[in-house]
Image (cartoon, rainbow over the protein chains, first blue to last red):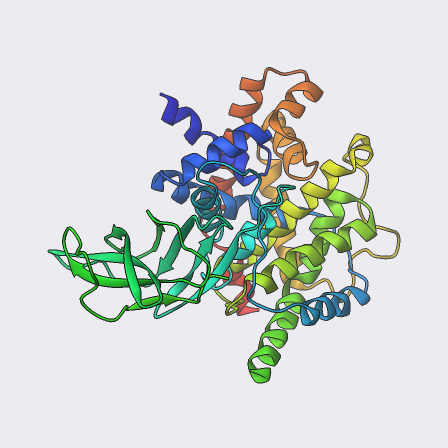
Length: 222
Length: 181
């Protein structure tokens, strides 16, 4: 029953019409509900169609130059993200919400997180991945989630294992099976400054130390 | 490295050239004020820029994703600027002289007609709830207050409205038509 109720919040979330407390609850719910993420992706498309029913308005010519100048002045690919809250699974919740809305190329999904910035001064960063599309999203306290697409499902008897790697030492950070779409994996271990995150394919149940070089690695955490 | 940065700049410019007009029209409708509308569009495109390891502007879904970003920024702004929200919603958002022009592409006109027609097919209260939420930036509790309906009614009307609109609009993604133009 409660699931049905929170499921109904998809439409209002897609319209940015939830009250702040319900919005937070729904984002947290999204992190664990694939059905709602899928529903939200569809409803967000419909909501966006409403953008086209408005009267035409011509942007001033200066806006294009203003945007390009501002972009040039910034270092690309570093994403200052400000989530709305400071406790709980912020990383996972924000990531799930963004991934659901941005059912598009993962190279750009992180911008949705930025689009949902709040006034909280805790900033998330998104680190590029090598070896697969996606990002590692990390809070200043090291809490992190991996968003990765294009990894084929792990074969029978195998699992993907994530590692926090620092000074050549790898520490286990969680298992996932991989799937055809986008996988969102919250790491069980914090990612300290200077560390990278790697993914290897291991036997089911995982192993204590990686048995190969990582298939996927992140850029080092700032 | 400079080459990569250069190509990303070109990609951002291309993205703006394709979607900037629709983005601005949406922002203008929500925030009313031309300067604030520019802010909303700039915020959204810079968010794309910051997150963009690689642009895939032609990919299905990218257009609605951009509009999702613009909408969120515009709604944030209009909620900050409380005073604008008491203005009647049926007031035209377009300044004199900025009506349909040669620049208003045939695709945008067709899409506008298609979505407006779909909206007219919704029951009145559903349409009202949907439009006030999306274009007015009102939250559900604010709508319950403003319209004098129970919050539960607003919630079910909003859900029904968007689900019905999805039915009416059908599976054709706007960006598919876009690509052929």
